Length: 153
Image 1: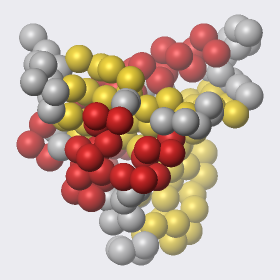
Image 2: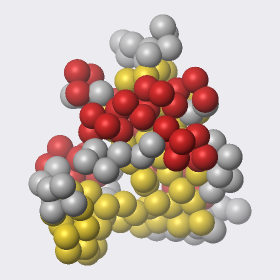
Image 3: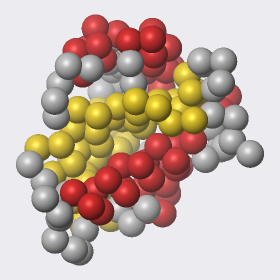
Image 4: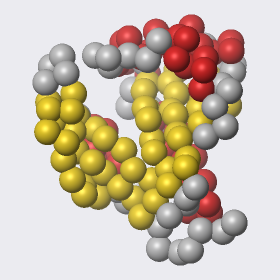
């Protein structure tokens, strides 16, 4: 049984999401940048939240017309391996199947667990961005999931 539910990001989540950003990424989004996304009509952020309100992970998506760009999927280190990232990504994939032509993202080439997660959901490597990441410098793999059916308006 899952000890969390998926909910839309709101102001109450910002501080903990910013902490997760710092824990997971070498160039984290600031709390202010995350707050701005609350008012971005192109953005959708979802949170895995325990019953006591603690944020275990989150994911962000930007949509332009029929194209989806997955910004980040991040889970607190002590909650990894419990299917949280899988559940977060599944929400975007199900949304994409009904509304989008494709989902795309960048991932560090050394991030094997994330690459395996994306492949499990049908993403394929379609390119590479040389030295995309800094600290440490590393290439990004561009992974995309194209939807076969025509998107529904």
